[in-house]
Image (tube, rainbow, N blue to C red; front, side):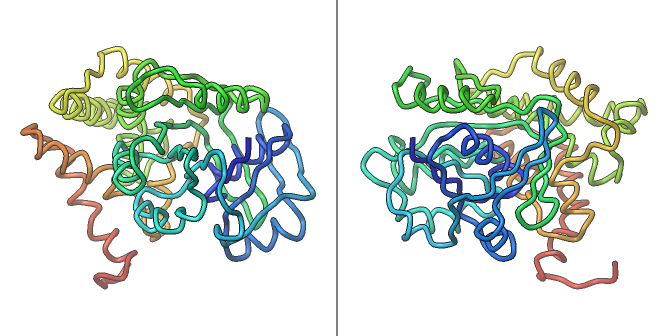
Length: 313
């Protein structure tokens, strides 16, 4: 398959690197110093499954130079999706499909509105990936995984082709029986982890150990479960147990990208994660008191990071 990875950071760089290492035709869409490093010295990936270096990778900042591809792995921040949609257009041919590998539950709808639902395959991933430096990605997750599926949950040849490509790359890959449920279950894990972590400034091992913060995590999960139900997506009780299993199994010091961005004073996915729970809950008539508090508490820092307001750190 010819695969474009749009956003070559901790997520796109990692999974794109694994696919390229396995011999897939991968082109990375990147920018700045990271792009220059990819073009001059290749890609280095430090991985729990074994480190590797790709001395030569195909990378550019201009999708028009790439032309149409079979699949696009979209691996940007949630708040960058609208901008990415415009940049993606040169990559989209009659049979191209886009797989969003980003947090949140709204990306597939945004992409469908722009390109048509037939050009979108649902997706999510789990990886503790970070950009260590230009051309250098690190994953600390014991098992990094990708889940994909057609938005109508039907079997398809294209999903199977992508599944096989990830399998050849040694990536844990599954096709969800219901991709919408899978997306909400992912949000139920990552959003409480990130928002409670950002408010408390605590990593996973601290939040899971203190009864008070563990209770906050559970309350946030149950609000997400209720919002999903209000939108017609049934998230089973077992999803909460699985989310806690992942938090309890996270390495000491683990944080989410949203928490790290907020703490560092960078623009984050606050609006597309925590804000989305509040917004979608309101639309569905579901109250989200904890998320309303978390969003309001973190919003001043988000606005400062975006230059909308100023106040001393």
